[in-house]
Length: 189
Image (cartoon, rainbow, N blue to C red; front, side, top):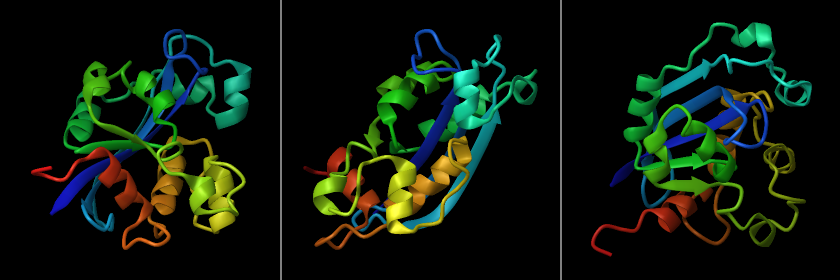
């Protein structure tokens, strides 16, 4: 049996969704073999910028490189985003606790959807002693996987997907399969 997984990432004006704003989102909707975690197809993807209605703080701009000029007049397509996310059985982000609050600015009902965190939902240090931490770019470096543009939403989605395609040590599944098993109970269970 297959499941639909949406891997997503956001870029923002700061760290707190109660006072800061989302300025970029990327989502990749995948068809995945449930038991193995093997990606079968990319079903759809979306990337959008949004004008936050205020200047982007320099500290945030220094991280992601998104300028006020880049977002001027831009709007994230809320209906398209809602459609993509609601089509998924599971939403995955590398820091889902961060991303969830910002995505809720566009799609409020996202907080009730099932989420998995590829940062905290995988025991990186115990599975891979060579991993110095669970930071996305550091893991990509350790495993020498293809990386998207760091701290841009679609680049981080691509890097997360490449990490989740890694084999789970000692199991016949990928790391994505590990997240699926931990968050989506088997039917009839």
